Image 1 (cartoon, rainbow, N blue to C red):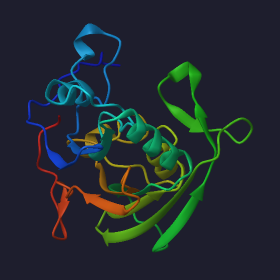
Image 2: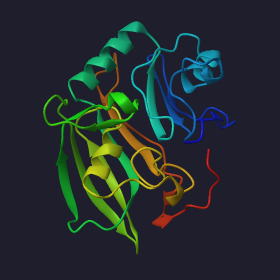
Image 3: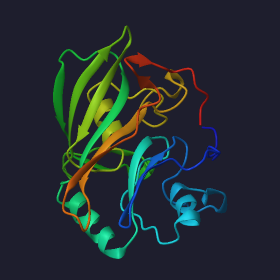
Image 4: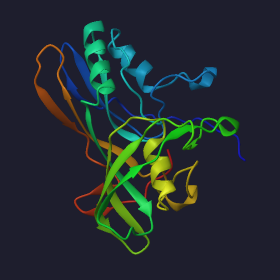
Length: 227
């Protein structure tokens, strides 16, 4: 296996929303959410944000290869509020993915427990004995000759959940280096399109959207260089 070379994209911050409690950002594919242990893995969305907003606090993560909406807190109270919302499954998430093949149904649910695949970390796998509960709802958006565009709605937030679940039902996400065919697309075709949450301090629900760069206006766009 080729050694991993971290080459984060050199792009400006894409701030979707900012107020005195939260920051909502569109993370690019290829950029770590948080710093890794090696010195050359310190460049990440959290550190880039902190350079402009020193008070920023982490709430959740996206996989490096996944793009899309992330929320950060700007106060400890906001961080606690958002953490509780994620814990109690009050945060609603919608992802766009392009998967291999064509499922027979138009929508469905995956309920498969997940656990760390320790000999192959950071990979995860289905584990019916000691895995943690994980559920995903999926809907077909568009069928193509050898692939399908799906909307994915994770009901839980396990590591690599969407990637493992789609692979487990025989439709891995295109461009997945761990669970599918990495050469099937120029990047992992998984994007966190929408995040809906209760604004800390206000108590009102708001939805934040980051348009999907590889599926827009009903067209699938794959002609992009790998991040």
